[in-house]
Image 1 (cartoon, rainbow, N blue to C red):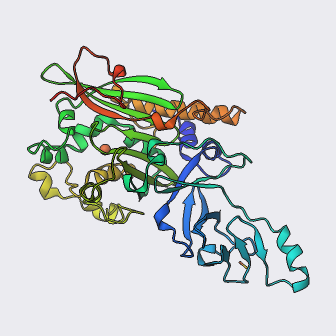
Image 2 (tube, rainbow, N blue to C red):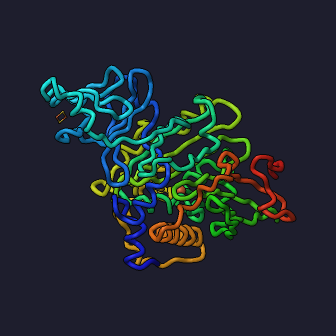
Length: 420
Ligand code: FES
Ligand SMILES: [Fe+2]
């Protein structure tokens, strides 16, 4: 349970709010790299309660500006994109990809150059990695350390980044991703469907729905082990890596492609969840790509666009529930997550909840984020960005192992052979 003030602090992300200012100290995923085409339409991006546009210039560079034209604020999403610059269709002001105003044809020719030099365009540094354009929205001259995750260093063919947009606060999104105890319950329909083929190690998660959680603090966040004793005396561990403020590396079998999920605030009531699937060793096969998108809307920029909402109860199938499906949400696993998140309403009232021991991960995450944002407000440096951290060595793991080992001895980069 949180107080009303704590809940507000966690959820409000606009400019000037404590959490909003704190988050602006980090790089954030903004838009899919492939969604930007050289000289193509600029793409509107809403992040942390503000509106921006991203575009790809003629030479392939990406520009990231405030959405409103610096002249009279009409949307630059309408602008012409050519000649490594955007030109506003209203009065023709031209801004090059670096954010410099290079022409103001609405002014008399003799003062154009001088006038243009004075106009400031709010533009932001970007990085392209892992199929994503990342942006730094803070005000420091020197952008912070980039989270050089394993997938950010892989060739394009090894990574599939896609995004879902949902109507709820970012922290409802993050909490669902951090919550390992719902796995064998919320997703049991899917697990049971796959059980006969034995196609998933998640089957093991069902043996014991209430796992025991253990933690190890890390300079980037924490490592969490959800430990489920198995009937044969061995242990099934789902070892997650949580990198603050946004990222959760989802436990996966050592040989399978891996997943990172994060929840990025669009504003107080909407969030974008990025699902990044990647294989450190090989290109993702067509079969994996197809499987990853199966049951979704297929739109990589909003793969839950056809999920439904309150007006149709997200197409929950009551007949399927009678016939044995747990949720009646049969499209795909992520929809089950998204729907329970949206069904808390856009900003859940955390003064009314009743937490148990299985909620220890989210309790920890809330405390760490609130403390960090408060410390930042009081002048401390933002945590989780120390020079020494090697984000490329952060990997999750799901594995059945012998109970005479400790889960913290398991190395995700060099795991033991999983027990059958
Ligand atoms: S509003 Fe863009 S040039 Fe006038
Ligand atoms: Fe889930």
